[in-house]
Amino acid sequence: METIQYILKSAGILSLFYLVYIFLLKKETHFTFNRLFLLIGVLAAAIFPFIQFTKTIIIEAPALASFPSTETASETLTSAAFNTNYSIENILLYIYVLGVIVFSLRFIYQLISLFILLENHPYKLSNNCKIIEVSESISPFSFFNYIVYNPTLHTNNELAMILAHEKAHIEQLHTIDVLASNLLLIIQWFNPLAWGYKSSIVENLEYLADRTTITRINSKKEYQLALLNTSLASPLSAPTNKFYNSFIKKRIIMLNKANSNRQNAFKAMVVVPLLTIFLWGFNVNEVKKYVEIPSENNKVKTENIKEEALQPVLDKKDIAVITGIEPVTESIAQKTPKAMTKKQSPLQETYRVKIDKNTTDASLQEIKEEVKSKYGLELSYAAIRNNLNEITSLTLTYTGNGNNGNYQVSQDKGIDEFFFFIDKDGKTGFWSEAVEKRHKERMQRRKLKSQERSLDMNERKMEMQERIQKRKMEIEKRRSKMKNTHPTHSASPNNEAQEVQGQTKAKRQIHKNKKAGNTLYFIDGIASTKKQVELLLPENIDKVNVLKSEKALKKYGGKGVNGVIEITTKK
Image (cartoon, rainbow, N blue to C red; front, side, top):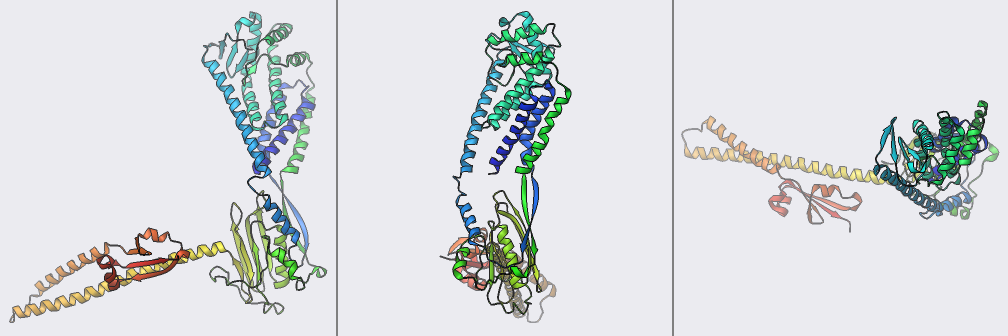
C-alpha cells in the first residue's frame, strides 16, 4: 500500500510540473531556465512523496461511560475481510512491477546496442570529443563526449554545422538529462504525461543546442537547410542527443522566434502554491487528540444495557468487557493499592478490556471515559499508527483512588493484544499472554539452573564428608598397624605426616577425576546433552527428577558419579 501511494504521489507531482510547463513556459525562449525547471520537476517527483506533515485534530468528547457500538466493530471486521493477498492494491502493484521490468529491459537493450556500436568503430579525438564515422544510414547523434555520424550522407558544410551542434550538447552535458528522462519513463511508464515530459526534456535540449550553434556559424539559413537534409536518415533508437528529430519544424520556429521577456520566467512560480496545495492535500497525517468536556447531562447508565445488545460487541476485536476472568499471574500483573471510593467498593464484577493493533481511537476514548465514570481512574494514552491504521506503539497510564500504573508496547508489525483489568479486590494492572509466556519460560530456566547449582553443592558437600571420613579411617588404620609392628616405638611424626600428605594428594587426584565428568541428562529415557535440555520449552515439561550420590550410582553406575537429571515431557 505504501509503495502504491508513493508511485501515485510521484506521478501527481510530475504531472503538475508538466502542465505548468506546457501552458506557461513551453512557448518561451528561456531554454536554460526551462531545462532547470524540468529537472527540478524530476527531483521533486522523486523526493516530495516522502515529505510528511502532521495535523492535530482536537475533538471535544463528553465525559460519559458507554460501550462501543456495533457499527464500529462492523467497520473493523469489514476492513479486515478485504485485507488479503489478492487485494486490488496487490494486483496493481504486480502489474506496475511487471511494467518496470519490461521498460528496464528495453532501456538496457538500447544501451547495449549503443555500446556495441561505439566499441566496433574507431574514433579520432577533436577538442576532447571522440569523433566516430560510420557507414550505417543513421542520423548524427552524441552520447557524452562521443559524436557519431555518416560522412557520406552530408556535405562538408553540413558536417561542420552538425559537429558544432553536437559539441554544444557535449559541452552542456545534455546526455545526463536524456538518461534521467529515460529512467523517469521506466518508473512512471503508466503515466501518459510522463511520456510527454520526456519529449519536452529532449525538445528543450535541442532548442538549447540550436541556439548555441547559430552563434558559432556564418549562416542561420544554411543551418536550417541542414536540419531538413538530415531528416532523410534513420535515427538510432537509443538514449542519445540526435541532430535530427521529428520536430524539425518546431526547432526552426524557435530559431527564428524573438527572445522572450525575462519577466515571463516568473510564471513558473505558479507551481509553488499548486505544489503546496498538493502536499497539504495528500501528505498530511491527521492525529486526533481528545479533549474531555465534563457534563452531568451526558452521563449514560450502563446498568440497564441489555445483554443481547452487548453480545455482538464482545465478539469483535476492538474492545471486549468480560465478567469473571481466570486469575492473573502476580508477577505480571501490577500490584496496586486496594483503596477505592465508597461508591466503588466492593466491586460487583471484574472489569477487563482487550486492546490490540486494530483498536480504534474511538474505542480507546470510550475505555478512558468508562474507567473514569465507573472506577474514578484517569486513563491517558498515546498511540502511533502505520498507514494501515494499525497501532505500532502504545503507551497507557492510569492514576486515581490510590492506584497508578503504566504499560508501554511497541512492535513494527502491530502490537500484540493485551488486557487492562480491575478485579474485585481492587487490583489494577495490565496482562499479556505473550509476556506471561516469556515470564514462565524465564522462570523455568531459572528453576533448572537453580536445581543444577543445588545438585552441584550437595555433591561437593558429600564428597567433602566422604573425604574426611575416609581420612580418619585411614589414619586410625595406619596407627593401629604401626603399633602392631613396633610395639616399643611410636611412629615417626615426620613419616606419618608424609604418608598423610601423599594420601591427601591421591584423594585430590580422585576428586579431580570426578569433577572432569559432567552431569548426565535423560529426556524420556534417552541420553541427552545440556544444550538439548535448554532447548526444551517449559510448557512441554511434565516433571523433573534429580538423582545424586548413591541413587545415581545405583541406577547408572560410575557414569552417575556427578549426578543425573531425568526429564519427562508431556505426551
